[in-house]
Structure formats: C-alpha cells, structure tokens
Image (cartoon, rainbow, N blue to C red; front, side, top):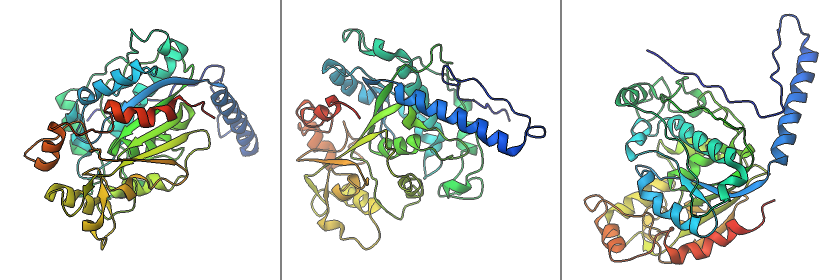
Length: 352
C-alpha cells in the first residue's frame, strides 16, 4: 500500500546539514546539530506575532460550522481561517486513535497562514485563504484501516508512545513562501487538546510538529483537558505531559450553565466521560459537554469561565435533544457575539 512521507521545509536562512555518520566524529556531529538548532531557535524568536488565527473544529465538526466564527474574528481585526476539512475527516480518528490525520491538517493551515505574514491582516475585506488539499475516499479507507491506537488497538497498542508509524494520506500543497510570522491557534473542544499535541517538541506517532515555533497564542474553547479513563484520554494525557511552551501563551475558556443532574442524559454521559471514575457527575457544571474543571485543567494557562453558554454551534437533535433545544432557542455558544467580547480582547493584547 502506498504511503506518503512529508518532510518539514527548512526555515529560510538555515542551511540543510547533511552528515555522513560513518565519517564525522560524534562530537563534531553534536556540535553541528547544536548550531543548526540554535539558528532555528533564533529565527523563531525573530518572527513577529501576527494578529491572525487558525480555528480548529471540534470532534465531528467541520470548517463550514466554524466559518461564521472566522468571519466574526476577521471583522474584529483578527483575520482568521478554519482548518479546511469537512466533518468526515474525523472518521479515521474515532475511538481514541492517533490524531496525526488532524495534526497534518492543522500544520498545513498554520504554515500557509504564517507564510502570508503581515499580508494576512492587510485588508479585512479580503479574508486570508489557505489552499485546499486533496483527500479521497480511498485515502479515508486507508487511514481508517491503518491509523493506530484506539479501542481496537490498531497496530498493537492504544498508547501514543507505542503507536506504529503510519503517514496519514492526503495531498497537501507545498509552501511557496517561508514563515513570516507566528499565529494564534483557537481550538474548540477536542481541537483544543489536539492543538497542544501540535505545540509539542516530542514525536507523536512518529512526527514532532513543534508547532510552538509558529504559534504565539493558544485559546481552547470547552476543551476536555483533565484526567479521565476513556481511551481517547490517553492522547490527552500525552499532551498534558508537556508544560506550555514558554513562547506560547494560553487561555483556557470554560462555560457554566448546564448542571450534570438537570441537563439531560447526553450531558450526564459527556461529563462522566470527561472526569475520573467516582466523580459526582450530578454536582458538575459546564457547557453541556465539557465540565468547567476539565476545560480549565491546563497548568500555566490563564482561565476564563463564561456563564450560561453552550458547548457548540449546533447539535443533532437525535443525539442531544436538550442542548439542541437550548441552542435553537437562542442560547449563546463560545463564538456568539456577546461571548466574543469577553475572550477576544485577550487575543488583542500584546503577545510576549
């Protein structure tokens, strides 16, 4: 079966170091690699912080669901794009499997927006765009069969450190320009903790994305960051091992208004999924999907709790009837105009 291996493009001004390990002494090799890494670190620090953002949809949501949020942020002076993916691109990741397919899409979007540099904010009437990528049904089938981890332990293990190497399918357009700045990541629900995977310098599923080099700020909206027993939380726990990168600030946003004992069966089950065994679910408060405690469980992050706010921009009524009724009756979600006024000012602050 065909696999595609992609290699991160070198940053401008850094020469590619090709070393024959049989001929170069190990001490010299280490010295050369330290010089290369120092050059990369210096260059990253010199990249300006852009008022531009990439939005990562939550689990089983797609770009279309978050386009209104991107337009609202752009109108407020933060040109924004949504990771260009439909909801069905989540299918290979279902059941707590590797998030590499989603990470490839985040990386594609971040790198293309960062390559625009100050041009990303030049004209609010002309929103920034990211080129689409190709992903066929055959690609989907290949990823679904081979993407490791999860309940079925595809590849032999559900632990991220033991995932077998599988390069996610997809034809992602190459960059025409190097990065000219660092951007903001806004992750909704699962998109928040997956964004933390992206920031890490450690290899996840065989690839270290080192997203902190191109991301100056992270906002998570109703993301379950806390300890829990579900197999998907093996990935969350992997992300939680790393402290926040010193070059990336973070705002963890939670919401209250949906009690665990009075918001319907869907909310009770969702809260139970997000907390350790034995927690009194009926005493929890949250946004109807993620309890407040879990959404704020990012050590070192600034915190914000919104009141009377629901989790998502819409729900299937056959899955979450109570939440669907509330949303359809006009209840705010994190991206509603009244709520943007509470967390967007943090984005407008000068970044470190």
